Image 1 (cartoon, rainbow, N blue to C red):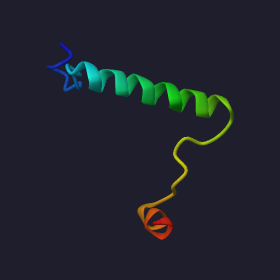
Image 2: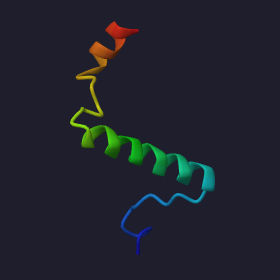
Image 3: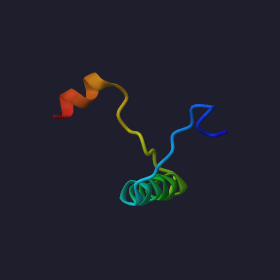
Amino acid sequence: KALESGATLVVNLRQALMLIDALYQKWITERQGREFWTLQSWQECHLLG
């Protein structure tokens, strides 16, 4: 059913672990009251670079 609904399936163990780590880091950051996504736009991103 997941594939029929268009849900993404992670089959690579390394990618799955990286996804879990990224979601955990996002949760920790937001739990501390900080924004995880701080860039407001692509223009701002290019100004930083």
